[in-house]
Image (cartoon, rainbow, N blue to C red):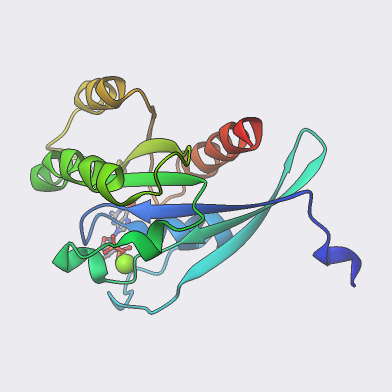
Length: 176
Ligand code: GDP
Ligand code: MG
């Protein structure tokens, strides 16, 4: 085994949320620290990896992408299998994507493995855009309702992205 293959934890984080909210862009920003504005909507990439140091432990974060199925709302049990955490994203300029946070929370409830504790967070993405539909307060309120963490982020300029995933990873490591 190579030295670089040794990890204290490997954690699996799923991206969820409406098509177009920026899930693939958030995965790319977190794992490669870049933004590709002309992503093909079904990139077909299952997951990307980023290694974090959490309290001196090497944590390998796999960030899983829905790769387009979310458009037809056919996220199934298979996608949730073995997941430790969920990053549920909406677009702060798109009211429908925000309303659908409730839909996705219910989907998690229906399909996630029973008895399997998952850490969740809600991400309000695209805060680089000034013309918003959803205020910070709206986002905070819905996160409070579900009892999960909330971050405003921008996959485009990177604002808040690593802080958000880092904090979810800390919660996951603490819970496992
Ligand atoms: P997905 O369908 O949820 O995977 O969303 P994508 O990552 O494919 O992004 C959908 C569109 O929103 C693309 O045109 C992205 O370039 C754009 N986008 C994603 N994140 C941001 C962001 O933080 N700010 C801005 N301005 N555009 C973004
Ligand atoms: Mg995508």
